Image (tube, rainbow, N blue to C red; front, top):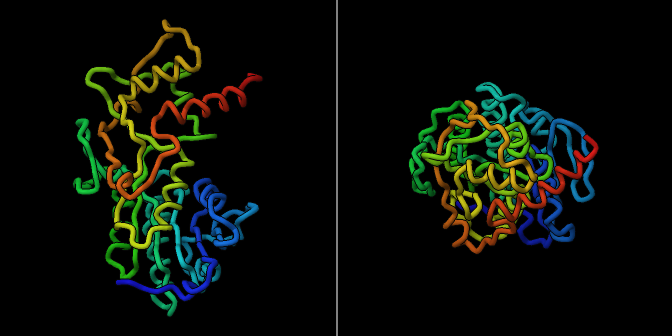
Length: 297
């Protein structure tokens, strides 16, 4: 069903970001303050030069209703679970989506678009398969199941919704893989364990790109252009860190996870251009920042 936003005749759009963390802040920085009024809703207090923050626990319908703008052109839902558990994901995704839809259904002014940030963890494929928007999503993990449940609630609603499934997000402050390499944690080389990633800045750029489209499709996979064997990624990072070639390495249980390759052709066909199309182009500056932050160790 198509709705016309009440503020569509004005030049300045209201964008509400529910769960406004790193990605939401980067999105706000990309949007012109002359053309966009960004309202960030999050549990903890925060400040940002281009965001009007409103503090609320979005799992509470009452609190969310109090801070959600009466009129929003675009609503972006980018939540972070309070804990990595089934309950944490249920609260952060399913409950928040249920609250949002219930509030919006009672209002006369409807958003032009709801953008929901999801994850490629909804795919359980593990044999190096190529995945696109037509691939079957049958998650086995609680995180994937809850994300898919929240997605379905949005799909079943009467609102224009676009779901964006991001692959592994990396960037400044997200140093888990670098630290694994430093600890000597490796991944199997044969058969290769394919991994997929996207720089956090490109995550924000994808959301801005889709917001600007008159009629974005219902689903996009957002991952960079180089699905790569995790062993090769870690070897490249080790070289960038100038670690010794004879360093001790070991396979860890965390490394023995699903293997798949995420295709991004639909996103590319929409006109999106990556700032960091390969892991090398993104990790180069991330590693420099990591080394600078840890130079005193």
